[in-house]
Amino acid sequence: MSDETKKDGVTRREMFGIGIGTAAAAGTAILGGLALPALAQEAAPKDGAKDAPLPKVPRRKLGKTGKEVPILLLGGAAGFDPRFDPKIAEAVRFGVNYIDAADCYSGGRCEPAVGAYMGKAKNRADLWITSKSDKHDPAGFEKTFLESLEKMSTDYIDLYYLHALEDASVFTPELLKVVEKYKKSGKMRHFGFSCHGGNVVELLNKAAATPWVESVMFRYNFRSYGNKDLNEAMDRAHKAGVGLIAMKTQGSEASFADAWKKFEQAGKWTKHQAVLKAVWADERISAAVSHMDNFDKLRQNIAAALDKSMLSAKELQAVNRYAEATRSLACDGCDHICGAAVAGKPRIADTIRFVSYHDHYGEETKARQLFAKLPEAARQISSMDFSGANRACPNGVDVAGLMKRAGEILA
Ligand code: SF4
Image (cartoon, rainbow, N blue to C red; front, top):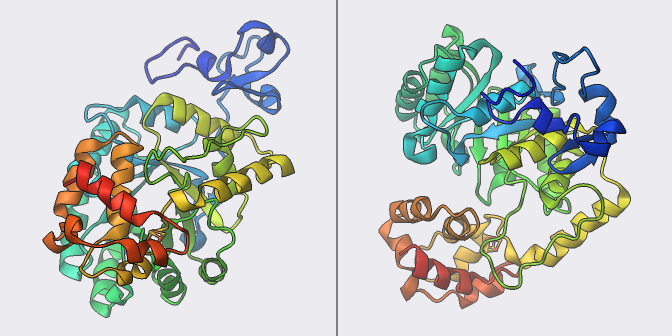
């Protein structure tokens, strides 16, 4: 393909600014608006070498799966074009060949879109596909797995997760039988789970003690560093060979509160890039999944992944200052703490997450639909008193304010 061909999205020329002005003349590559001199020698094709291969995002071993995956993963929750998504094609060109799908993403449209992409690109063998089941009982899990295969028109799924696991007691011999059956047939290459909730420490410890759990995807970002229990659980899981994948790495705000502090960029990396690099600095983490719903985010994240330099001390300090300044504006999902201080059965962390989808990601319909799926008792937020939750939250999150906001936009 020519450098100028735009079939799959951004061109090599756009990606690296090849030939653009003085930067290129000086041998500096421009990616995501950033000057990346270190990439220039590696990435920019020399005269007469227009078809030189593009640089690929580094890869790390995913625990006991023994397989290497790119450190940057394409999150399917961002939504894909159901006919053929050019963002997937562009990501794959730079080695981001891991697509993180789920049965429920985009209201069930994610898996068919992944199938449509693979059908047109004819590159199944070059991809790593992860998908997830919202059903955690053995029969439900098996049924959803078979549906996932069908929806993606694929003979196998590289890694299949129990999605958003909360209950550590699901690892029964009956579930193991289902997993073994499909692993033996080659339809399910590896097995694990994802978790959003507040019992991530318990679940990571469970994963470490369960030999057939090969990977866990969990909430991990720049605000997690000081969490001793989490770090010990990560150590155990990592030592047991559980491949660790970070999600929610941006640690996004619960809402566009006026008090939200801006990231003070201390080097060449934007906030989005800096916090990703901060996660990659943790060698226990194999990869970070990212919500890249446009080419700009994709381009910026690939740039951050391709550049092997570490954050400078100044940049790390900026990340830490940002974490501190925004601490009370982001929720960690540990609603067994704040929920216990409220009469009623609210789902505080989920509700705050939906507010975030609405206010931060602009996903108003999805936010309302997800809220509508909560049990009726959890939706009665206007009749609950959340002042105790405010006092209980160790991070100082304004639960009452966010629940009021949720009542206005989600109910
Ligand atoms: S509001 Fe606070 S206690 Fe409740 S889930 Fe969020 S971070 Fe945890």
